Amino acid sequence: MTTAAPSHEAMADPLAGAGDAPATEGRRIARALLRDRGAVLSTVFLGLVVLMAICAPLISAVTGHGPNDFDPAAVDTNLGGLPRGSFGGVSADHLLGVEPQNGRDILARIAYGARVSFLIAISATVLTTLLGVVLGLLAGFYQGWVDQVISRIMDFLMAFPALIFMIAILSSLPTGDRSVLLVTVITVFGWPYLARVVRGQTLTLVNREFVEAARASGASTGAIVFKEILPNLRNSLIVMTTLAVPGYIGTEAGLSFLGVGVTPPTPSWGQMISSAVSWYATDPMYFAVPGLFLFLTVLSLTVLGDRIRAASDAGEAS
Image (tube, rainbow, N blue to C red; front, side, top):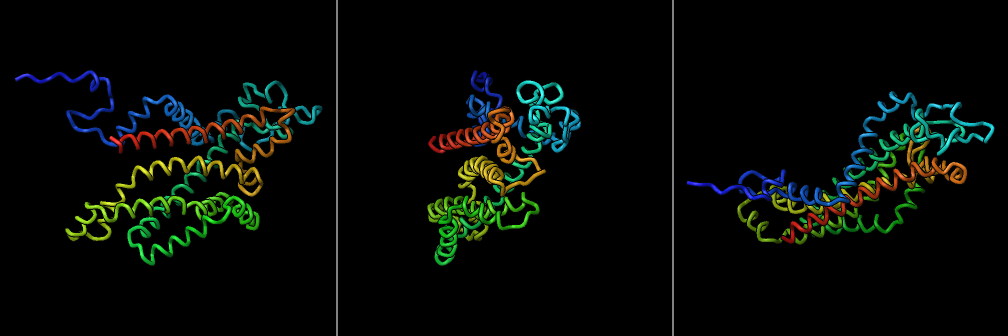
């Protein structure tokens, strides 16, 4: 008995499953992303930024410059504190230049600022996802007065101009651990948007045949929610959480830029951009470096989230 040789497509695809087993959803999305140049470039850049954030102490140890270490020799007091040398003081000692007047190393502050941005954005995304999924499932599954109460809370929070109220709340709160305050405020105003999507999709699923069959078989409420409904929300949740992270990074940077977010001496990209505004004409590198990192990070996360959404939609269509 002879066996057929594997096809060229199967041999060329390192992510293909063994034998004739169908590819999982994760593998199918991964293959689609690997064929997309924008997704690959975004992933590479995000990997670099995340690596910088994780290795921030190592970067400071290797370069010999911490995020708050002053280097008076790197600035020229006769020129009002402008960095010595070209391109904002870029040199072998300071790879991305230094801040005017104080000579703090921009590379170290970018690395530590990435830590702050990702920590706040990911923490806020996790909390908003948990709240949004739980409350959205409750509203869509039980309906009735439960749905009315949760929906009215969502309407109430979504009616506020979120950014203005974030500024007002953070301005009135005492300084302390600003990262915790930022995560809390972002979560309070962020969860209703995800909860509304989850509620709508739950309403469409709760009366489907497979849910009714589970009820008829005597399945518990927990089994119906976690085994029948929640798995069908997986793709939407992945896409929405992926797109939430860049939004929260931008929110943190905006609040820090306005002076109500992360406060000195803790490094923050938004805070660095705010400090650089008065120097962009004489030292454009001080403005360009954190601005470029913020722009490319948000762009990469947005592109990656959009590509994941497209790949997920293509799988559902097929």
